[in-house]
Length: 378
Image 1: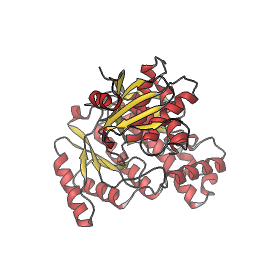
Image 2: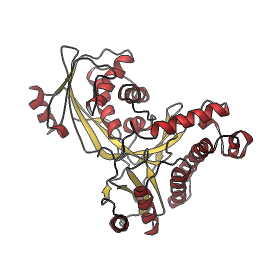
Image 3: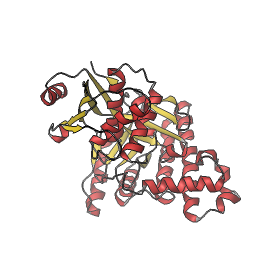
Image 4: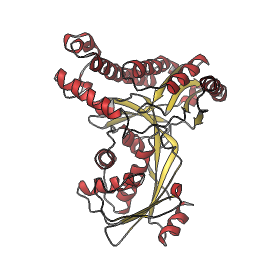
């Protein structure tokens, strides 16, 4: 229906159409803006963008989720656009800021990534549009560079202080693999993640507790990490190893900064330990305790969990999950769990019962990955 929706809005067919997925992070939370490591997978939930060039500099955008009403953006500058359209405009602005001539565009989007669930619906939207423009105009931008451009659009145009993991995952993930991301260099490695071959599954449970990163405490966590890095005299917290946590410099920090440092340093180590298990001869189930330790760290040291996420993790572990953790920026969104394949519904029932006991909105099961990254349709 997307091409027909484009035609209905703009009176002509689209020239290109691109799909970009949402993501879930296996492990490595809040590490990307600290130049660290993360291990996301793409989900089979996507945003699709249909595009065609215009003969002027205006941006005309419409969305299936908003009734197909066309918004006309004549001046693509930060502060001039809000709402969902700002992510489309941010991709256009960032490409222009990177030195690419981007004319006016007609853009129509549709998607299956639930907004506010911590599954990077915004990055999927940005990346579908950015990849579509790259294709439409034959720009030939390398995927890592396109991720940087889309990330700049979210940071500087939309004003969301996120790290680059979401855009990298949406553009660079591959089928049946997780993506080891070095956020400093943007070097990526495909890591085998064939859980089905081990009779396992990764559950993604939407707690139905939406979060908004622009006006949440996410920005505060980033500032705290940057301040701690300055106090420790390192470019980023990625430059510390686990041994540094017991050192005089870290113990001299104020208690809040000390907790933030402890999470980032230990989380980076957990990412690399997880990759070592997935690429080695160990039982894949051995990553489970690392996932659970990650949640504990996010809850206690980084303080970005919430009652719904904690309840979901506890219920999943109590029902027999090998490991479970919150995923995404926090303060709501989704939890993941490593479970035996075929047990997803019974595990979800355990979470439902716990949520009922606490008076929470019923959770939902989200299709898990790993799935392919951004690609052209047709």
